[in-house]
Length: 328
Ligand code: TYM
Image (cartoon, rainbow, N blue to C red; front, side, top):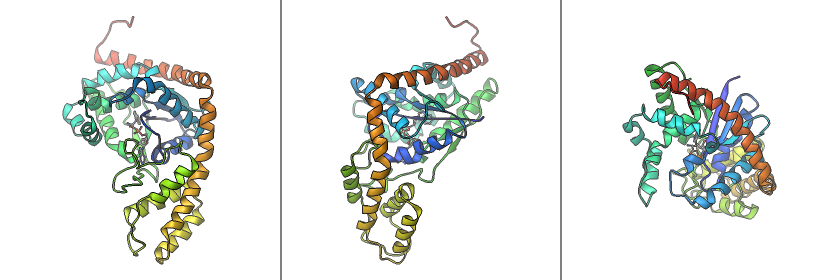
């Protein structure tokens, strides 16, 4: 069976962009592939963060993933820091990654601009850690949103370089995108929905009224003009397609086309569709969080399996790179 790997950071609020661009796809893919999904807490420390919040955020995210349909009996669900080999492989691959390529990463440039207390090397090396996450499991496919494509290209470049310099070891992983691979910010539909931009997202744990209110406030345009949709309305249709029944989408599309669509009606129905989809996930998340020990046990089980796979790859890489000493 071919292998799929993906990761998500426990920073800020997980939102419907993460859900539609990645998580919902993971839930489907776990039935078709051998899957490993990871809460990437080592990535979360590359920007300013609160150490006393980290563990809580890891558990919240893991609970949300399970509540959304990730089945720990089918899938290896684990936390990155439980498998320290990710960090070891990162060092080994850091030595064959060019600084120029890292400096060109769009996310690095954007995030570096937002760091008030200085930019540390971890932020620049972030994509090498991501490459290590994927390559350590020799994953063939990586289901992500559109914003991770550049990082995945770098991963392929690193894999190629390793294979040529040392020994054919890594497959070149391919992305798997969804139809909703780029959900835009509700308050600014020209930039992507993002955890770090307040007002841009609907969080997975927002309550029903907050969801309705945020959709009501979403930026649109003065009204259907015929022709190409504006970015705000287009984004609302993307969300509608993802959350509502196809006949409702058709009805609103037809109304848009004959310029009779009232955005207030679209928002009303979209708000309800999102509430219907998220409420059960939110409730299940809270139930899971009420039993943190069980959650930790699930994640620990996943990590034990993942670690065995990771250790095999790291042993192979050490050997290929010329390290012969036994590991103590
Ligand atoms: P992260 O934690 O920012 O986001 C998790 C996933 O959500 C997707 N996503 C979106 N999709 C559609 N529209 C949006 N507005 C939107 N915002 C986020 C992301 O593309 C991602 O798939 N670097 C990764 C985490 C990572 C990783 C990995 C992913 C670390 N190691 C290895 C894959 C494989 C990140 O920051 O995702």
